[in-house]
Length: 248
Image (cartoon, rainbow, N blue to C red; front, side):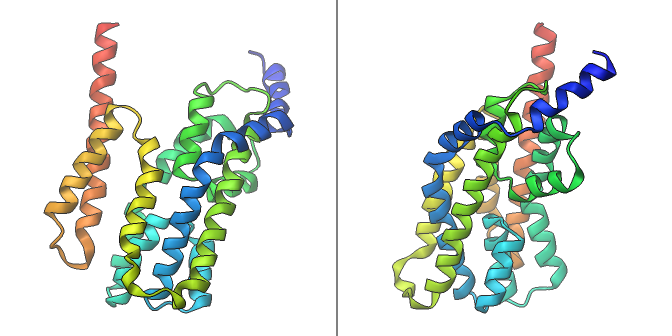
């Protein structure tokens, strides 16, 4: 491909394509209720953990990562060292580094501000759905519009649920068992992402490690579980790839 033809192909990716936008919205629509419910539980949890309403609003708007927020809240409440809080949130969100690496070949030509915005609103489910639709890095008409159709409603659903939970948090009695509701919500979000043997094995290993390391202080068992689960999935994926190459 010549440089001129490569440059000419860029606008077809970046230009708005209404049918692809609508397809992205339609594809992500079934997950929005679970995302909103998960946001609601996290919003309530932030207020119940002692954060003020401005602090909780700032956290949900800036962090936008329920698993990292829930992992950090008990540490904040327990006056854990700041480095432990940041390290916990960082480790829990390491998967976004992988998401960025997967999306970068598709959109590396976009301005950095646009890539930063897309990275901020990206989520587990939306990235997985996009890569199912566009496994190839080749430029295609409507690719960016499809991604936006997935990302923006997902972000809006989370924020609406989370902000509602923040303002409702003080009125919800503790006996409602919100921790169990949160577990159900995140399971609904997680199950569709467990595609393939590496992801499934990573989840199982992380679950086992989290149970075995539950007694570690400052919830450090969660960090250990995430790291071991990610490493297990990566090792299995690499081993499977080598095995496929040998057979091929």
